[in-house]
Length: 256
Image: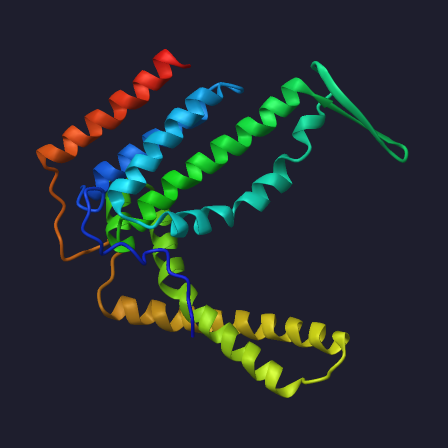
């Protein structure tokens, strides 16, 4: 079975990979906060943030093609959510469109808000991709735990990432079995079979969750993330944190 793993490049030896996971998490979440706090229409700030992120990607030695491929997956959902923003009523009118009985009016403020949302969403997504692709998932969860993220969230993330591939394997096997037995069947048959597959997958997931829970309880699991490597914040980690925050503050103060 073929899977698309997010942590494909977590074993690289780069400046970003060697950072303490807690420092790395603080840096990138601070980055997201600065991006979100940027006022609409100040695209020079977004360009500066994008430049800093490009430098981080360059230091991480992760292929730009991999980052681009992962980031473009979410863009259609952002477009679908924000597609109505350019047509807000208040503001300077740019263009009017008539579709049957509907009148659509594009305003300058709406258009700026639309591009601002796209820029914020994409840059925030890049921050998360850099964090995930340069940190092993177990260490990332341990960093969340050390930073006092709610325990239930770390547990959900842990189980989701650990067993989503098992469920994906089950779904692929069921898909292969369906295709080998339904050559030339009608569309209605495929829809009915798909609904049955979803029901069976739900039952298998429930049964697998029960067996995994009992197995983990028998081995003394108490909800804590344990890794072989111990976290240790070094001087270079703090220095890198200071540099990034200084750059973000400089962009915020000088550009807006």
